[in-house]
Image (cartoon, rainbow, N blue to C red; front, side, top):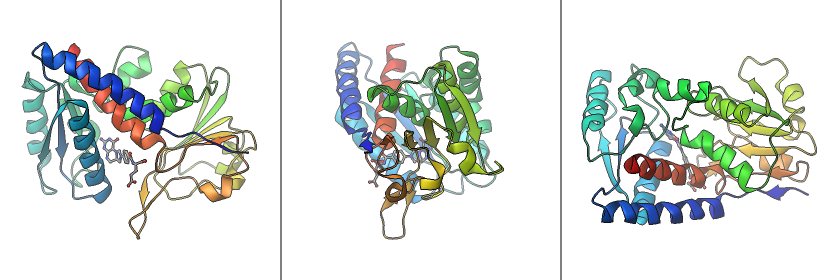
Length: 279
Ligand SMILES: Nc1nc(=O)c2c([nH]1)NC[C@@H]1CN(c3ccc(C(=O)N[C@@H](CCC(=O)O)C(=O)O)cc3)C=[N+]21
């Protein structure tokens, strides 16, 4: 029996709290505002931006999308992030990935004021997270932990295996799991015998961006699997990094795609924005 660990209910609860906080802030003269900086024509990024804008509007957060175009230079992007950082009316800033080929997200994100860094992209935010100091974690990494907590999955002493070492998900998720006293292993493209490692996981987090990489041979029978992947399919659908048909029935729990980590990610981004506006 595999339990579906959905994110819809959790996301709705977070959005309800955000709506109440946003209304308070607006009444007190500080209407919360999120700025989304885009420099890509990538379809999954465009979908995410529309979804952020929609969710922001529904919760009473103003959202400005600043589309610099896919030919934007690193200097242009840096200047925009600096201007938004200096703008007192803006409380949250997110720089969408992917970026133009000559731009390095970790480098550009250093121009986001850490207080407004609602997606934890500034290297200072990741450093503070690693050091156990207050910082906004990247919303996707935090969504993994929030989903596990929501469904009552114990982490202390558990072996958590994270597949993927990106700055935006794998690394921060590993730090958050460590903070919760999990024993953490991080796997990546050079890992020898990936399946042998992932089969030892109590909690398996798949965050590589490779459609249906994780199959039945990668999972233990009692594992809980969190699927972070949102890979667009040619027919306009969406698949995760986990082959759900292959692992279903074998593992104890699995987060669905869509309807799992994704909606929680967007809700947490808004939560971080009202928290920043509150100061
Ligand atoms: N700096 C940065 N941070 C990100 O977190 C980031 C990014 N750039 N660039 C693009 C990707 C993509 N991403 C998604 C988040 C939620 C859903 C989501 O909520 N998807 C819905 C379904 C979507 C559908 O049905 O088409 C779901 O999973 O239920 C998808 C994709 C965050 N990203």
